[in-house]
Length: 109
Image 1 (tube, rainbow, N blue to C red):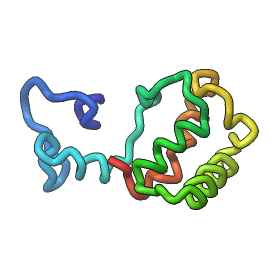
Image 2: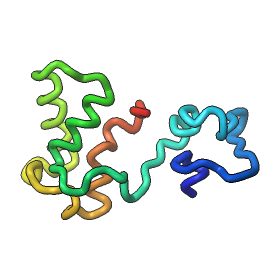
Image 3: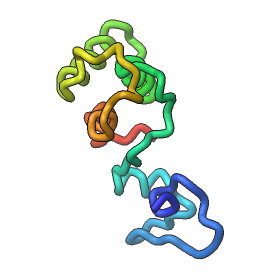
């Protein structure tokens, strides 16, 4: 699964997704799959708000007001606003995955 989702390199063989060569065009594969693993491999001690700060930065949102509003909106959408200062390691897998969900429609990678 990690190879098919481009999280690790293939040791041999080919990977074709329709007309997409999965070994050569990983960005296209990720855009089509919109897959996030159960564990994002990000710092587990970071807070929910800080993790969303990272996703906002990846999306190119650098205006302080826009960025803060977006982070707060997402925390409210996924029902984690009250837990925004807690470390992500204490969240269920579903809650941890819910945070980046609003960005799935336009992948960040």
